[in-house]
Length: 226
Image 1 (cartoon, rainbow, N blue to C red):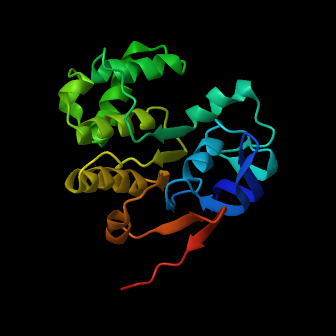
Image 2: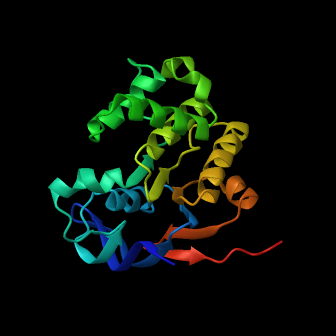
C-alpha cells in the first residue's frame, strides 16, 4: 500500500493555541476516511494543516509526497494541485458559468491547450453527473448541484487525495446522500478521500474508517458491525 498521508507525533497549533496534540495517523491510497468531532474540536485546523493553510510546527507529517514541516510558501500551490479540496460553501464564482469556473481553475494551474481543457471539463462534469449544466451559472443550480460542481472542480488536476470539508454541511438529507454517492463512486475509481463531517447518518449508511477529534486528540474509532 502506498501511504498518501502520514502524521507522527504531530501537534497542530492555530497561532499560539495548541489545538491537537500527539497526532499519529496514516491514510493509504484508495482509502475513504471520515473525520468527525464536535464543532471546535479541531477538524478545520486539521484540514487546514493538510492543505498548507496552517504550518505544521511540531512533529512529522507528509501528504502526497510533500513534507509538511518544511513546506515553503512557494510550494503550497504545487501541493494544492495534488489535492482536491471541497468546501462546505462550494466557493463557486457566480459571475461565470460552470464551465467558466472550471476553466478558471485550469488556467490558474497552468493548463494551456484549449482542446485538452474542454475535454477535461467534460470529463469531470460527466463524473459527477452534471454534463448538461456547463453553460449554467452557479446561482441557477440547487445546493446539491453546486456541490457536485465543486467536486468536479476538485477532480480537475487528477488529485491523489481529495479533502472534503463538511461537503454535505449545507445540504438536506436527500441531497447529502446524492452527493455522497458521487464521492463513493469517485473513491471506487481509486481516489483517496478524507471527509470531515457532522453527518452521522451518512457514516452509518456508508461505514468506513473513521477518525475522531476529541479532547485535543485524533484517534481512530472502531465501528461496531451490525
